[in-house]
Image 1 (cartoon, rainbow, N blue to C red):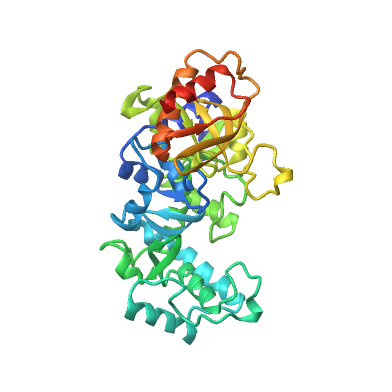
Image 2: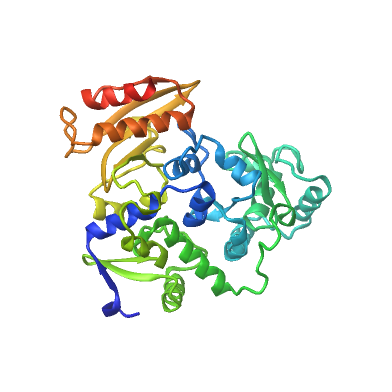
Length: 403
């Protein structure tokens, strides 16, 4: 497809596509298939990132439900996509380029997944079954590794390398720690495609990245497009996917985007089909796939989002773990929060400049109250602490939600 053959959308259509695609409420298994990948992050002041991604899309979702989906039902497995992620087990075959890429990187840092030491760890797992880094290998500290991201134990570095290279998988978690096992004992039958080529696997990785986002700019930041290949190779693979109809090129008022046929098809649906809640309020995860491309979100929605969790406190403008608030097709606020022992504390609430807290737009107080009620239920919270700056109507909406 040439540039002249690109489909053209307005920004309003692009916003509509994204909201309808992402927030057609559906059962957990359906949402997992729609997204294809969910970024994992262990921080959990109001649930982990997978929790927050799913609670915005799955009616009745409760914090921690993803754990059973992953380690009980095997609807998800731990893998690598845009950073550490949860993927569908049937797509494990597409991880092969990442596995080879990581094996080379670890070897450059002196850790060889083919070394006798590494193979002994694999043998130990094979003999004893799922186990954590506290139970596998030599537990002595290596002075040369002190201060390392993965700690001072060489065995832990080896286990991480074996996991990155696909020689070990996460069977389950113990307090957040991986319990390692062999892939053949974790994956359901039929989860491998032995005759897939490198290009086949890379194409699935590229398409899956776009699938999760709904719309994604080819020029998005490198962190959004982290792949086990150079950008020129990615572009070649994307052209292959476009030629085969798995990706579609779009022009949105002068900016290029990629999308999938499934995402584009939602523009042809009735506004409230398939459980869409076009006027609902949603609290989004900091790493929600809708906002992976922060530059794209700023262009389409006029919303400038920065996740400040790794900034020193004195440098934060918005807060530690700030969630964007979407109402219909516009971002209206962001808030910092934590939930402990059944109490949800909103540490700060920041309205967007076009929202006047003294007089909220028609329909917003009711939508906010419903979203607050569902968020409290998701967290299992029965008590609420509210900050200044909400305004009378929003404060009343939150207070009514907890009753």
